[in-house]
Length: 320
Image (tube, rainbow, N blue to C red; front, side, top):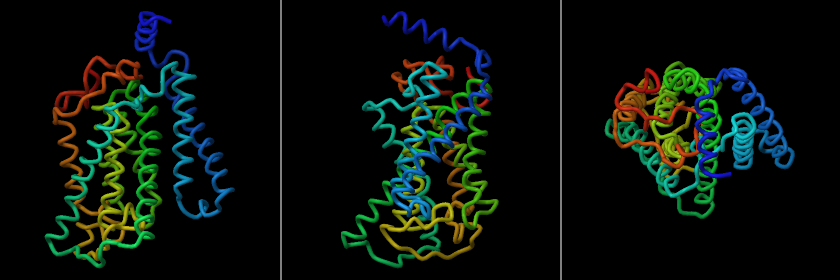
């Protein structure tokens, strides 16, 4: 098929209303159903081979979840939308690596402000040295891989196909807020969770949604998400969403008022992280440094591609 024919098909697809054929609501319902089914089957297979996966999240279990998300995304994009799954922001090119690295640096910067502030206030002190044994180093590597896979799964599942379907039908503001609500809901059953923790997770979801809308890169947001968890759990050794991920680079002892530091739940339940996340949101909205990959736009994503993100606050009200 010639490039002209491909371009005509893409233009026709972009101009087709979402409500034609399957409405956006039914598409989302099918996507969620298939995703849950795929996760149940693949993680069930992992649990059958490794019973430990029933008690805790393992690398194999997280890998199975990623596989399920990728499989269902491929089914929906190829079978229902007649578009390449890479148009969701999964293009494998040199820019993908740069986006992932840029997202990691940004996420590291946002989160690292919190332990630095805690240390300056005398609320965080080292309780152990840097690990030296190969056993501890391998454990740290294992947790790092686990956190990377978990971040990739959540970004594909929440801010991939579902985000673009909602953004096309109802605009970016609805997509950003609705996916952030889902993201917060996924953490609502974590041990020790409270309203501050839920609020911070909601803000984190809004931040990730804005980053995804402006870059259309799942690599960018996965890098940010991964750095968020890795900085707290591995680099500093603080709880991540109420969970002790283990194998920290340094061990720390914490103190100070829980309303600021998050206490046993970790920084995500403290107002210090609230402030850091709000600053991150302001940057994500206003910075001119974020842009969309032309290769992703050329593949014909579900959303409009007439603008390269948005300038300032205008994109929160609709697609220009």
